Length: 321
Image 1: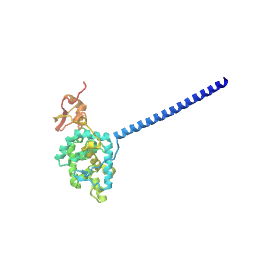
Image 2: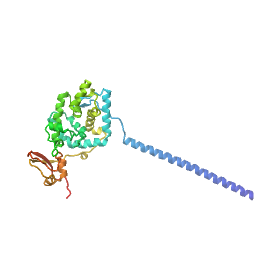
Image 3: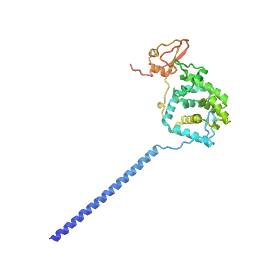
Image 4: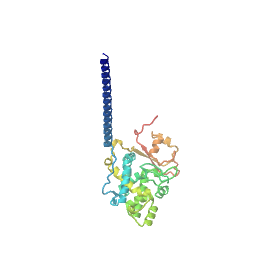
């Protein structure tokens, strides 16, 4: 009997042991399967991300030109500089989107003025390169969409003082830019050089030409800003001309629009622009947004000069009461 008991105990131990081994083996297999499945899911997820957003080189279009003047892409230095600006401006997506949105609003104002003055349409992209189509002021004091210095503005007939600064007047400043560019074209012989001179100044470009004994923009060794300038304009032009090719998909309703206005002529001082705005059922902020060349809260106009102020049509702004 005792022998039988011992045999049964041994068999029990063997059974429990084998069960434990089987359980451990199963646990190990389950863990391995779970890890493998997780890895497969991770790979699939990465694959989905990669197919949804791919960072690639940008194809440079053949026959690239500025204002009808061919860019020498067979020069490896020129090709690298063009490529840099295409990459920077394509993959700086937020900036490019803002350019596309603002261009829809402001290009219809700029384009006919360029055409009237015999300036190639490509120069509208110069305004984008200069200011992003914003009324900004540079550290040097260049102001407005066309980044005009005060001396240049006055030379070409703009009124510039603390009370009125017509560098902020889009139509008038575009007229000045056209005159400046036309003079530069006559001076340097090409529109590409005229664009570069707009950035570096006519005197600066002449110094470079005299020192290096060359006359073509693509042959000159220039400073960082002017050296990139025309290439940046070229990239902006190409991206805005073919946005979907570079991955930018906007609907018409995504684009900024110009609010229609009517003109009011003034030949008297205005003591308070807030009161003046309220008389047209708008507020001070809206008046100044449509007339940024009015720089103070009043208009001096001691000379009784005639000014044209733009007032937005009714119904476009909802004012708080």
